[in-house]
Length: 358
Image 1 (cartoon, helix red, strand yellow):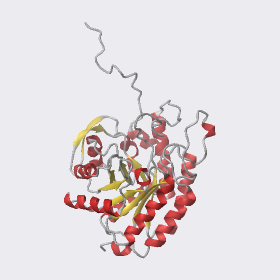
Image 2 (cartoon, rainbow, N blue to C red; image 1 turned 135 degrees about the vertical axis):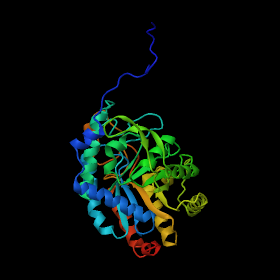
Image 3 (tube, rainbow, N blue to C red; image 1 turned 30 degrees about the vertical axis):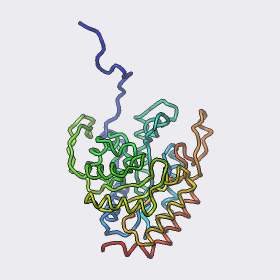
Image 4 (cartoon, rainbow, N blue to C red; image 1 turned 120 degrees about the horizontal axis):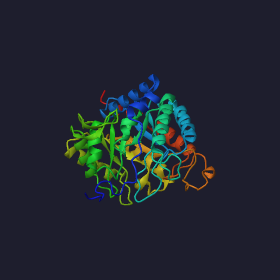
């Protein structure tokens, strides 16, 4: 009999993980966290349905790598929330998975020790603990769904989900989104193509059947109902912004043509700020001005923000990491974030109520 290897030729090992059910039992959803998640989802659905006039603001670090600094940021955001709550719904950006164009640190779940040791089991547990801590502060959370298995471990703690520019065209992510319990923002492609986001919204709004993981960790046929709360996130593309009035009008026309609600979120970072974080306040100011001038389709913004401005490389000696500074995309600092949000609140508090349908 032949001893040739046929299967898994390039697989080094299969390391076991706790099941979603086991992780949930270890770190159960508290009553307070559950209420925060449910309320966050409900308010965002109402904003998308135009029965709540507020603006969605997904704001926070590009990625979480230090949970201590992350919770420090969350406490600051929670304190600010009370000031702006009548105008802005603050949702903390809590990104654990980072898509890479080639290689690089893949995020807190994949590599929590930031040393290529890839203790994914510990990363998943740490991520769930962090989400619990943020929700128990009273802040709803947002994340990017990159690995289609992760939502089974963390989905009960998420209020809003993004599908990134590199994965919006992926059938796997469109099918997954059709079963997610949150509103889902689909980013336009890295080349600026908005059609792939619109096609993703249409696809995710329908039921799908696909292979996935159940709570007991068994492979299962997942059958979804479809998610009608998909919407477009304009993030720029091909090195150019697409948050200007012409780009927004073209996105509105494309949504109407597809018979979809004209719901648009603008990502103030990435190509919209030419990957220069210090330009994010200008993007935010432009979005606010468009709303003041009568725009009805802009329902939210995304801001990459941290305690300290800019970004840093990951040093070999992790004790040299600068506290509260991003290790992925550059961010605006906390003082700038406060000003951006307070300015938007002051300029929109008398404008937004007239946009709601009730």
